[in-house]
Image 1 (cartoon, rainbow over the protein chains, first blue to last red):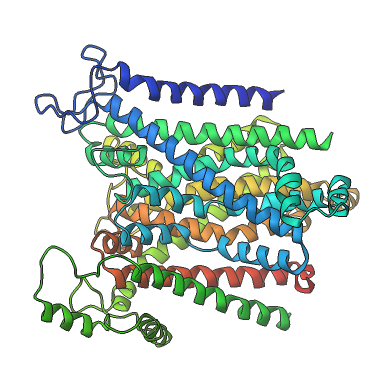
Image 2 (cartoon, rainbow over the protein chains, first blue to last red):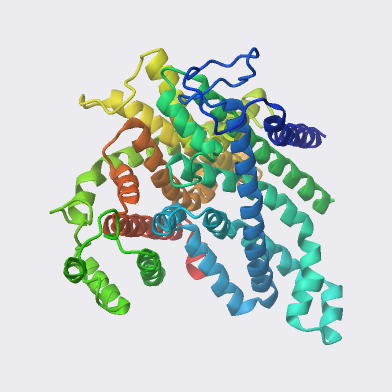
Length: 271
Length: 307
């Protein structure tokens, strides 16, 4: 019951944030690039519609923050999709084939778990001139490990079920069994784990942007806004606190949502 | 046990080689060399530079040269710091990062395990809810948000602690960076400990211990703690990786002259050898620490040795 409520509350907050991020910049009289050197570091106010104040160049921080949220969510969705495709394919194959192949594939995942992936992503960003598309792919490529593990576990148990046996007896090929018979049964747990990879993807993206290796000006993301806020915090604490709070809130909501969904899923599977 | 240990050590070698090869390839697949920057150099000068850094050799040869250098502890010359070798730069900055990371891990284990155990013993009570709420928050909020916000309130507004890396050696300047670095790990370890402690406390041998009239403190300390620590122990690998990552941010925010700061600088200067050298040393460190964790796991839980 309480898990159910936490799902509804966190989903509500996330949907609200996403809607405001989509509609807000469109309603606001300001845009994200126009500088106004007569009005730098203005505190948040309703009067001139600078809801979150302005930055050191006089740009409207509300619109910029909303833009940052859009980018963070976009990166999260695309990266989660990449990790979903890799993780499900890898996990399903390992779990279905089983035996030595499974052992080797999972040993490989264990190995990758311990690697400092973020440093590889930074290396990529340095080597390939901060390509935006690359951020998506790189983040997705490092986040598939959990998914692969979960999907493998689930596949191992599905493999023994009668309908898979039946498919095999009628001569359906292994690949077809994996994609047509096993994969659809994985959807529930996959959705749960995607909710948990989204905050990880947001985190990696904002970390890169914070270090100045992610999105480039005048585009922005929550990480880049936090970074800008840090340099201004002594004169304009809101420029740090607002994006920092929003980033924390979004990450927290996704984590609570994923946790709640997992509890529900487990409860349903156990009963 | 000897067989288990040897197998683990043998298993770590290909991993390490894979990492080095991957990092090396990534750097060398980069479009444009490290010197193709602002100034256009005359062709013969460019050739000369390439020859000096062996960039004109075929890639496999360069790789072999790099690996054989590594075996002798030579990571090559830095591209951006003239007259410095990468190993010198790493040796200069590593001790500070090590101190920071080790203190943060110690703090995280101490507080995380205690908080998790207390929460498990008071399952469902307000104290448990508080620890779990804190833990979820701590897991969710990234280090680069916690660090500046703590600086803003504790250093800039209240002026209790220094905001940066002061010249004054001691606990004062270490406090904020270590706490920031430890926070997410405290949160995660508390969660893990709570879950596994609850699981262990429901086992038969704990019931037997209780039935013999042992107090809760003794039961936890003597009987429950060791088996409950296994998941925490296997989390140590990822935890170390996370602390190293966090240390990059913490060193940036507090201006600590450590390896993480060196890494970020190397990245923005496009100092390929330095960045490559640091990635390779990070990976070596993480893989060796993981190896130690693996072996410890075998010591604590004999069952894994025969798997």
